[in-house]
Length: 301
Image (cartoon, rainbow, N blue to C red; front, side, top):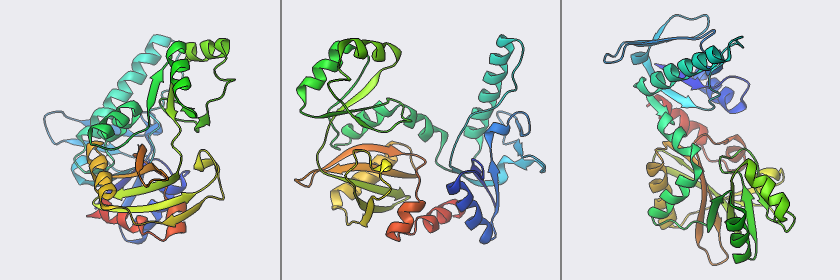
């Protein structure tokens, strides 16, 4: 059995899963896409099952012998700097196209798949899909129109903003942000996601296959990821929310995910986001939930 981890040993979560798999006698290796095409080789014959990966200092590994892939991180490809910018673009596009094709052709179990990764890149679609499932979401605006942004801000007593794609923490929307000149300049550079602030408690649920774990996150920070003192307390979910977790994972093409919610003072659950490659070690240590064992079982089943 061959299991690959998309990422490298510099990531603590990737290294953790690698170590546990190795301890259990599984043949495991890192698949670091930044080594392609300079140190990592791939071959594939479309229309056949013939394809292989050759990791650095290793023999070719047929795609059919890859039992599963754990998607921890994807950093694209790396093409050395070329003197001709046009050739640089062509080389990078060719490398990415070949890599994407092979990743989708690899028949092993992906935790998670390229399709799930792509869907996550379009976060506004997550919210729309969740709402179509009957899941409550915050009032949300994605825009780079200063008029629309100002009107949205006026409709809600408190609002927050965050990047459309991700990569930065949530912030309060203030009067300074709405200064016309500042707003015009900021929105001429990129759109923004605005949401009504949902009062209540942060809840994180992990879905692994058909298993759901949940914890209340006690923190006074707007974005609990900034709070090192945040408390994680195991929680029994209402049956309806438990079913929504499974429905969200399926609709988002996720075999495993962390879903963030806000539980309002009246007990309603409001969906915020689902992550296809969440951190879990701290959560596991604080709650005692056997996330590692569940992931390893999924990868080796």
